[in-house]
Length: 521
Image (tube, rainbow, N blue to C red):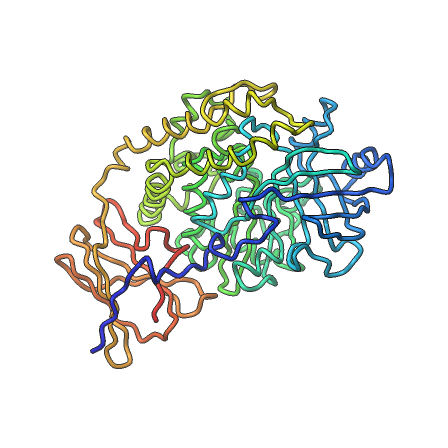
């Protein structure tokens, strides 16, 4: 029998997005230079008209980090970030730039056909969106983001956040494919009349509204050529058959999304009043995966968890991890029905514990936040069109400031120090968590034997898949007295991780599973 000892820090397989080779335009260590040149001197008026009347684009030339791209298409983007800023007569509006607008296959760095530049709306710290994506990319598929300095027709428009688009290129990066059902889950710009037989929707909550696809048009945008039928089936199972949910939903990545949103008080998301700002992609596995999006109001800026009043600062700090868990109206089935399952609920809490431990209890989030803050300080100082003053920029990393229309905005450090202490004081965060102290892999004939030591566990699951495009399967390992074993007739390259349970809590190995995992090698 040949024994292979598993060294987790060496053999964790990074299918994760944040471990891919960094691209220059999203390199967090530098500010990307973006120059736009419009032929029309009244380009601002034309872009406003296009924004108000649809999604058509205005042609321009583009230079990114010194490389020229001809005949790109430009439009304004966003809702609050556009309309609120425009209503005040301010010129710093958010942009969506399409590089293959007229020239097929014209892509930045041979890969990216979109630039999405946001105007740092409602964020006096200037860093929330970039910091939030940096943290999200540790645990789930998330866009890369950094900052860009924008010049238009030779005029300095200052500092923007520069966020990778969730499109075919993004899907290829993370799924190795892009031809599955793909939907943006957000309210439509213009209301579309649907059948009178449709059920009542709560925004993009994935409630089942009936078999007619028109019932979903107001809250979901189909980005792929087809996909309404599997999407409607997803809604039906989430709403009425949650016991079958693993057949059609990547439950673990959904639980990571919920854990992330509630730890960071990112309520401009599925868990907030508007129940939106995510994408869904159905891979060859048959499972849909939620993809987190639009994090500019993370860290407590958006203050509405549901239909009730706006939260005050104390309520933001003490926002329950179980918001919507026992919602009587069942408007949030992706939370209510998942957390009603004891195993899923414990996995969710372990993911919360991991995020708190790795980023917030350790202070790593603040190290990253301070590094980002310092790296853009001179660019913020010289930004002639910034929406918020340099004084607010200096203060809001740490402390509360007040801005028009939003009122008090908690400092990132102020919020997360208090929230971390609050969450870690809760009884469910202080249960004796199972720990996998050792594991090994051995070969016995045609089978691999997986061995685990976890003294405070009643059972351990081996979670595995032989092909990376397949869904993970979960089997209970044999054993007692802290030693567990399972045998599989599987092939080299099989990906796997472990979940240990003592009945009251679970522990993962690796901690970031299923986003990171081990590989039979």
